[in-house]
Image: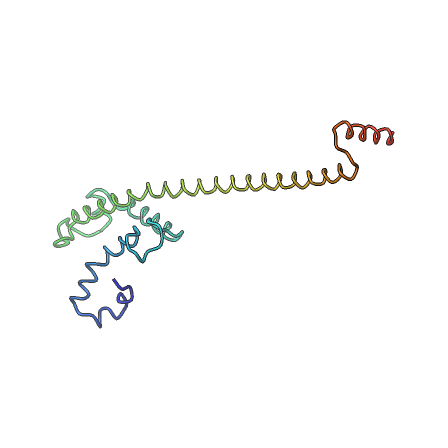
Length: 177
């Protein structure tokens, strides 16, 4: 599917059959792209959510879970007369059915939200480990630099054994007292 054809010109320049074809194939193309089945998709499969998407999902979930869940609650929520006065598809029981399905769907997003939070926690933990690792590397580097300074000192003072180093330290101690 060419993404350029799904624009405002779609309804004015394409035939009904072309629009129907796009409507039939678009979901398959979207799924195919999101699971990286297509050759022109270079990213790994998976769902990519922005912060705004996550906020919208939480809003949807909260709104859906606030919908009425009993026939009496639906009647009070809609605030219109007899339960069957709405006409075909608009009776209180029809709304209850829709609200129930919407609530059930919204409940399915909770595990995803939990996984997002868990991933966030894991990333924070990983970043803390990286900070500790970086500090350790810095300390090691400092130790190596200090080691080089010690080697230079030993060489400049012609010290090759531990005994020579101890004698030099003892001599310095005597000079300072």
